[in-house]
Each structure stands twice: as structure tokens, then as C-alpha cells.
Image (cartoon, rainbow, N blue to C red; front, side, top):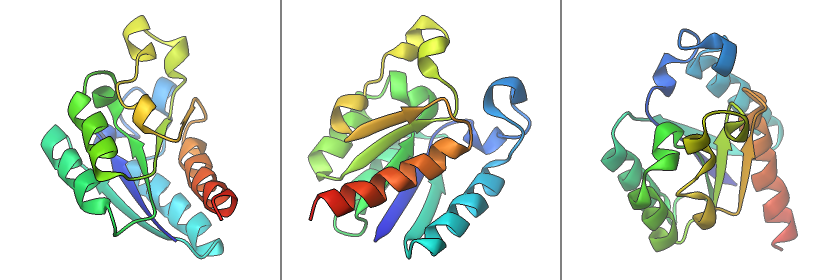
Length: 146
């Protein structure tokens, strides 16, 4: 199984940006943690981060047929990007939405996800473990899909 992990704006600042909300691990630390977990499950994990919405849309579109799942932390684009939602739907990819923080316990504008309806599920509020849980969701979904 191949899984693409997409990370949106400002996630390149993890470890220094609001650690009381997002934790002290860097994005590289999280990627290493996920790769280790993925290897134990014979899953190929690929990672991409961009602060640019169009680059994320392109990655979603190009993932169709190349990856079994996309795990996406669209960050702020979660709440604004109809383009990402349309890319997930249009490309026909199986996507899992994840967030480090519990978006429902934060500012009210963070409660609305533009991409959620295009995803098979959403995981939020478990810090860096949200990425592992996103991977596990893909593994379990693939098993139940057979």
C-alpha cells in the first residue's frame, strides 16, 4: 500500500510555532515517526508540504492511480479551500483528514472543514499521533474494503 501525506501552510514551522497547541516535534520528526510505523506495516509513505494551495491541489490530482490513500493536514486551507475539496472529489482519491489539535475546541471558524465531505474520515486532537492514526485508518480501511 502507498500513502501520500500532504501538509499545508505553516506546518513547516512545527516545533517552533505555538508548541502549546501543536507540540514540540518538527514536521521532520513526525515524518520519521510515521515512516517507522509505516515500515512495520509494509506501507510506503511519501510526504509533501507546501504553503501554496495550488501545489497541494496538484499533488492531490497527481496522486490518483499512484497512491492508495492521501492523508491530508490541510492546516488553514481546511477551512477555506473548495479547490482542495474539489481536487479530492474530482481525482477520486481516498483521503483521510487529520489535524494535530482538536479543531472543535478552538476558534469557531476552525470547526468548519471544506474538505471533510470529500474524505473518508477525520482525525484531530491527538498531536503527532494524529498522523499515526491517519495511517492506521488507511490500513484498516483497505482491509475492510476487500
